[in-house]
Amino acid sequence: MTKLTYINGLPLVLLLSGMSTPAFAGSEDVVVENAWSRASIGVNRPGAAYMTVRNTGEDTITLTGLTTPLAVMPQIHETKTNADGVSSMAPADEITIEPGQSVALEPGGLHAMLMKLQNPMIEGETFPLTLTFSDGGEVTVEVPILGIAARGPES
Ligand SMILES: [Cu+2]
Image (tube, rainbow, N blue to C red; front, side):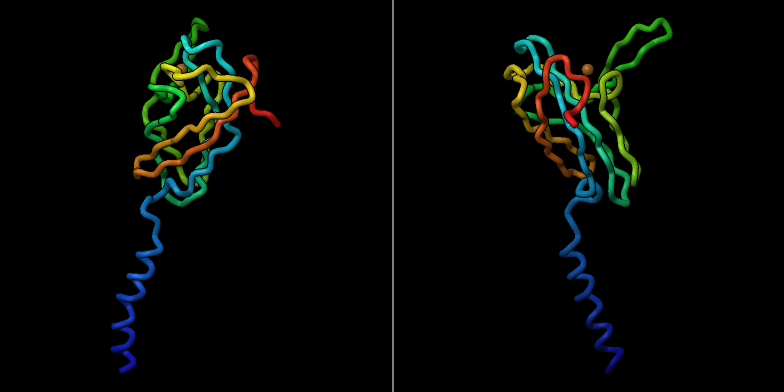
């Protein structure tokens, strides 16, 4: 009788634990820190945004893309400097972040390139930027717009 109760109880336990499991594996453990961007002059040139993306979970996560109402075509870019000291940038591949690790989007390296700005980026304002992950999850951060010559997040 005791054994039967145990067996009957098992599916219930699995059902309950299944119900509490998040729909997304990994991206719910993403923490975005120190997001910032610079003011733009008009909308003719793309903007850029920077941040640290931290994986606090136990699953590897993969950042696959960006969306924002501020720009028609936001992309993750990577700046590279060649042996002659000439910098160029290109769309980055998917960015994989191992458990406990973080990836810095910062000037001179990876960055969120905001192409085809819909509005000028005005100092003191903020805009939402959504990071999309391979598990289908999304993380939206509100990015502060700093001065046009800013070099890092406000401390
Ligand atoms: Cu770029």
